[in-house]
Image 1 (cartoon, rainbow, N blue to C red):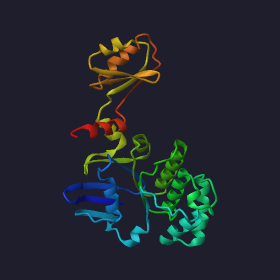
Image 2: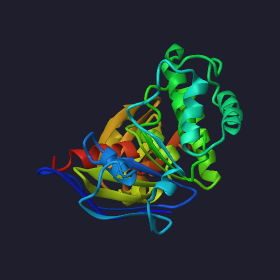
Image 3: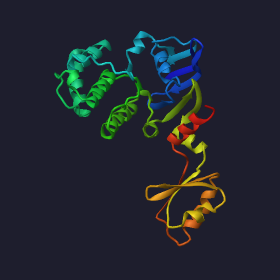
Image 4: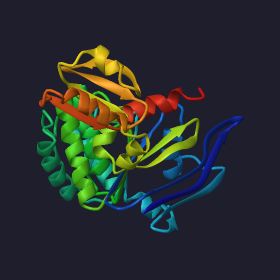
Length: 297
């Protein structure tokens, strides 16, 4: 289990991270979100001991992170670090050996991962010949080839199409099922919502939201109602508590000031006895993120 306690880091007069508390358990995925400059990468660098915190404590399984423990960490940096003139095999085996794997074992694992992630090419191809998406998948293989107990993934889906994003998401979930503790950052809130068990949102280095996805969303109330109905906008707008109505796909999204208003909307749209669609839900993580970022800017 990874534990961050009262973690604080300044760069000159700039407070990058302030009193950060966070726990990531084995078999759990933590989504770390926030605007650029919110403190996400600084947090990752402190965990990896690239930079020292000014105060606070970082532990893995209750002990400080030593060089031996670092061998069990897989890190995918936002700034990708593949050597372009090496072959895929040379690249991956080099990283695997740094983490204590034998070459024969690493080569066998590489072949399996190439097939699993549908990397186009052979292990003898040079990295510089790969497409951006395939290079991204090779970098991902380099991160997990040594079967880490703990993974840090900084923007793992940047540059990937939806199909390959889903492919990597499936593998991250499989690693979670095998007991790995995983922390990742992303600006894709729908992806964070699909993948994370817990979320920590940073704003200017401070935690503004933390907890499980459903708990966070429900805390904002079920103030959105999606309907597909022939009832005119004017009749829906006349319902007390309806704030806005927006066209969305085949229907409309109605924003209300109280979840109880949903009952009145349901009564109105089902007067004829049938409604094509009716869903009352809390705001999405993306909407919450935008709201939190906009407040007190």
